[in-house]
Image (cartoon, rainbow, N blue to C red; front, side):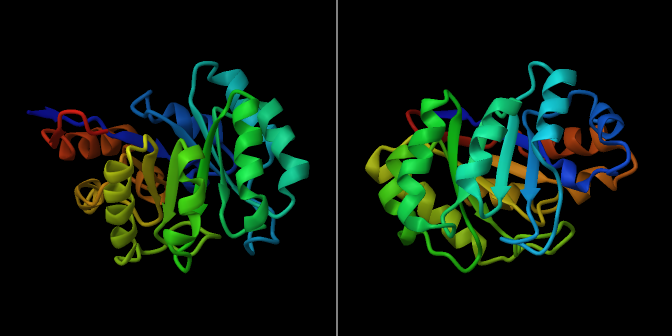
Length: 232
């Protein structure tokens, strides 16, 4: 028996005007599921973005929002508590940052009562993180090189989401699969068909004439997609 699948749309505020982030979020008119925050420190990637203060400000303004925090930073042991205290709903960390500490860090996030995600960059294989999949609430597949918005999607990323979807089914896991990078209205359904549950959309949404309508059109594009009963 097949049921209609619900997808998560997570607009990334990295694509918003940095001088008016609150107004940009308001322009979405609530037509989103998660707010995605790309946190960059200038070291792990060659760019800077937001800090814990942005998460705290969004939590104060949007009390019930699901704040999806993606950390592209090196000093995780220092910053993890700061983002947890700021009000993150979910924190995703890169498998490439001290892989030997990945299991412990994901466990720490869970102990704080926060959902834990693991992220892989385009050059990183799914196999390298299989040992932590039992701990993951989310696996984020980067479909562009981490560090800046507005890039084109790397098509081979879909092979990873298909593999993660297959492993999830075969091993009885419950993690969600997210993709970030180059997602837009024209390829959202392709990403969904490749196994993605959550789609991060930045520049495509916030550079559109009507961001709220853009999300509505994307959601409509994903309608009537079904999965077998019992699957995620």
